[in-house]
Length: 126
Image 1 (cartoon, one colour):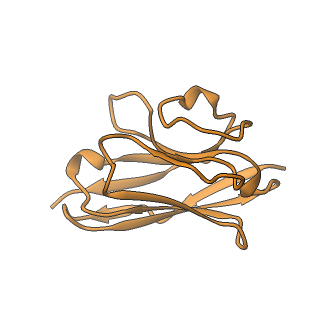
Image 2 (image 1 turned 60 degrees about the vertical axis):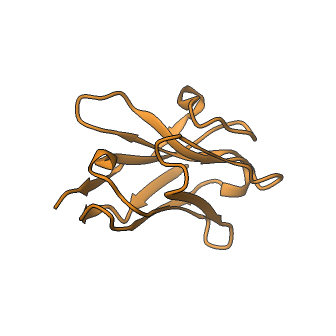
């Protein structure tokens, strides 16, 4: 059974860092595009970052996180990460990892994802 489980969320001060993890089971993370999305209270879910299958491992980021967030994949552990640096209060949201059935990804095309994790809360506040 395919499963995605996020962890690593929490409360952090502005300017701080967090690393989110997404452990996958039932499929190989190398085989398709995967990504991170977030949803803040009262707002629509939005794409944050994505990485294509291991054939090219091309990354794509939302403009709001470019230069601050880094998506990566550990094939040996079948785990995906999102390193978040220089966090801002506007980064506060529930973060989800997701899998696409396609090889390539576009950070804005969140409708293409067909499997989601349960989410992990990230709160940036002083």
